[in-house]
Amino acid sequence: MQMAAMERDGVVRKIGKRPGTTRPSYLFELTPEIEQLLSKAYIPLLTHLVDVFAQALPPDQLEVLLRRTGHGIAEQLSQGTQIAGSVKSRADAASHLLNEHLGALTHVESNSRIRIRGAGCPLAALTGKHRGVCLALESLVSEIVRVPVRECCDRRARPQCCFEIAPGRSSK
Image (cartoon, rainbow, N blue to C red):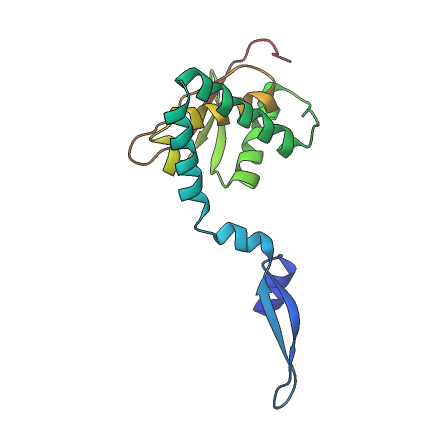
C-alpha cells in the first residue's frame, strides 16, 4: 500500500517483476526527479561555482550575472506567462513559485508593506557568503510581481529570505 502511494506521488516507479514463492514481487526504483532532489552534489558544485565567479569577476559584473539568472529562472517557472491580478496576488503567486519549485518556505505579509518572508532559505549554503544569490532571487520575485522588489534577507547564522515589494507603479 505504501509503495502504491509512493508510485502515485511520483517518488518511485516499477521497473520489473521477480518471481516469488507465492506471487511475484515488483521491483521499484526512485524516479529521476527524486534522485535529483536527493543528490548531494548540487550544493558543493553550486557553492564552488559562485565562489569561482566571485573571484574572477568584479562585484558589479557578478551581480549582473546573478540577476540575469534570477530573471531566467522566473521566466522558466512562470512558463513565459504574466501573472494577473493585484500586486498582493502576484506576490502570493511569487511566494507559491518559490515554495513549490525552489523548496522555500515563504509566506506573504501585508501590513503597510507587502513582504515575502521565509522561515529559512533554500540557498542558505550560499547566501551567507554571497549577497548576490539573494539578488538573484530578488530579480526572480521582481520579474513575477512586475514591480520593484528589495531583498531584506537575514544572512546570519540561519539565513531567512525576505523580499519587500514596492507598492508603487508597475515596472513592466
